[in-house]
Length: 255
Ligand code: NAD
Image (cartoon, rainbow, N blue to C red; front, side, top):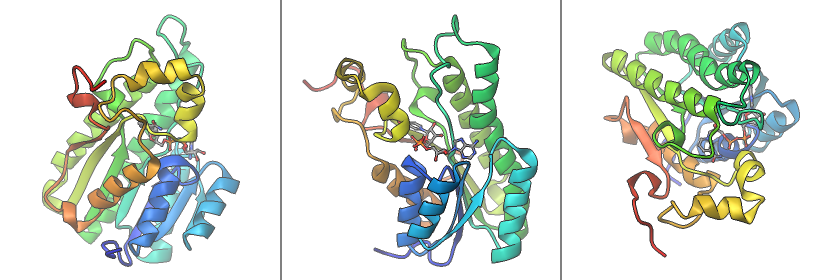
């Protein structure tokens, strides 16, 4: 493997599971020093140990903790090159707008969107001082497509991540900071499998829209994140980077 991220300091939120974990592995295999962040200490510690990185327990919805995270990383490692702001939730009480209460709405917006605002707010000053940095914020294909099987707060939260990311990419483009939104399609992680895929009928209802006819796997997203993090993507910023098996391009899919 080409070491495109040799000695880069990379913070990954939600590194204990799914897309974050696969990206921690991929970043480490390309030479990065990984700071694995998670709310779940067991999963986060295991991820950090596996990739020879460092674990920091942070609730990304806690402003002070996020500020301390990035200040601490720069104190200990001298810099922060990559921020993969990826932690997110998709709880069962987030459903149709008719059934979703304000408590669920606010919780989802806080963990999925406000956390990205905090992470960007507190990493960008360090990147400005360095004159370089790559930020990748995890949005979703649901920021681009509507679903009749609604999760209203989740969808709104990811739309906000997408537009916030675009604006940051434009604002800081001349100061060496690239900011891109990653829009994964449905990926076979614990989050998705729990929600949709346990029931074959529910899975089939979704898979019919995927030209490739399958859910993605976390490693396929990690490859895209490593690309966006690396200098191979040096002319890419403010993008809506879709990795979705063709869903957003499809009308009639293959039989
Ligand atoms: P996952 O549930 O497998 O992993 C998420 C990780 O984030 C967990 O380790 C969890 O402990 C951590 N986390 C949750 N809340 C946190 C908090 N407040 N502070 C710190 N860590 C926290 O999920 P995943 O499927 O890998 O999803 C990762 C991201 O990708 C999420 O933002 C999700 O919305 C997005 N996404 C997922 C899919 C999919 O199909 N799986 C599709 C599009 C987008």
